[in-house]
Length: 86
Image 1 (tube, rainbow, N blue to C red):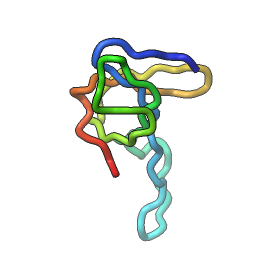
Image 2: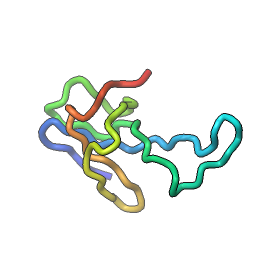
Image 3: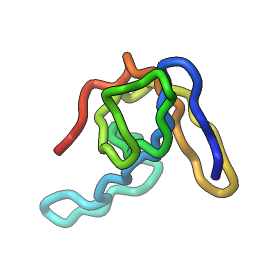
Image 4: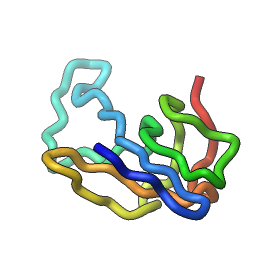
C-alpha cells in the first residue's frame, strides 16, 4: 500500500477490541461499537508529533473511512486524535 496523507492528517488502522466481557459473555459483531483506538500507518509530512506504529486514541465518529484492497482504514485530522497510548 502506498498512501501519503496531505495536510495535518494521518492514516490509521483500527485496533480491534476483545469481543467477550470479563465474565465470558460473547458480544456479537452487530452490537459492538467501533474501536476508538488504532495504529498509525502513514503520516503527512506536516505532522511532527506522530510516527508510524504509534497507537492513538480518537473520537468514535472521527475521520473518514477508506478501503484499500480488503483492508479498511481511517483518515484522521490530527485535531481528532486525543493522544498516544503507551
